[in-house]
Image 1 (cartoon, rainbow, N blue to C red):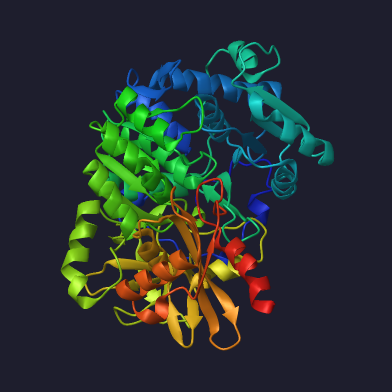
Image 2 (tube, rainbow, N blue to C red):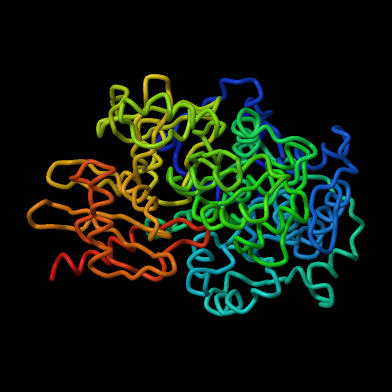
Length: 559
């Protein structure tokens, strides 16, 4: 890096993994070669107004307000002035952000990063204990918080004195709030002259495998990510209107609902309240949304409403965050006429690195059906990345063999002060923790999380494949499949099912579901135990928390 860091506060820089513990990065394609001096907000927002001719294009909209790119720039500048002039924050300081998906949350995130600080966005449903763990890790002195979510953060503040100041946003009648403070500013602010490799954000993993980790991403990482999946796969247009449910505190949501729309010159609709499946379909109608981001479970729940009401304006439906079952893919296509655009990414890698346009993946499934490969491929590696399927020693496996996914590209894992860095990065490659196979044409087929692979009597069984089969039964609304310890087989397949209305979880249904799996999959894959639940444990982003199901399965095995 030729440009010196702008960070006066070196807290994050000093706690990044040493170079020897980081993955190699590659910038093979010219658009990925970001200048050594770069501020991502200046590049995406300021230049949208000054160089790209998008000043009057709509960037953010809600039921109450519409903001052009020029409007957003002025408001971001005012907030950045509050941070630097009133609060005397300096580049490298961490600022905790707490809020749902709203214009206020988006403006706050952009202002923090433009001013050269490190944004630490947190999920709105976190409680004081969980917020306290993040405060301990990130050591922010200032927090910007939606006024409706102050209570838990104020409780955490009482227990963590490093957080000195909390300022509320989305509240116009508070003279000490962010809006009132920003209104007193000129709106003139020059972006901090950050080095491209200065940290811009800290993203806490969503907790599907237990204790969250803090993944750090630089200005270069995020700008390079814009030149990968959005350019080559999504291909958004300036007239697109984007909606979605993933939180801005989740990199899937931050990319899809803020960063990538800005890169493409399109606009984002922010709701007044979290979406329900029906309200998202209604919103698509009301605003003419053309791109939607949400998780597979949400698409499954939206399908009936999409079929009943139609979603004529929608042209691209992005599914990520967890594995996409074929049953959900088919259900959504039958209800909407649209193919889901699947992808796999990781908080540690910022966003999607394997993906394909939905029609291509479905066509590949049809071509390979006679080979017995499971389900539909997620797609091919996104240009700019390289991926391979390897064994436990890191050696690439023959095509068609299940192994661990290893990835390299312009983004990579950089945990903040965490020994688990060595679990994710090995020999210069990122290991997202997923089991895959790759066919001879380069398409990748998701099997399971690597630690979710069920080994029963010597057979490798992917939980998602069994889940997909169960979801095709009329009785099953949702399900999760894990391995349960077993003295004879090592593990058995156990399914946790949420039933549709009108079905009873009795022995007769258990046997019917088991027979259903035996008919459609190899018999050794059937769930030897099925437990019926009213709901499955999920993260705030909608991901199934299989580690909690595994914990539930343990006592049964020991009794």
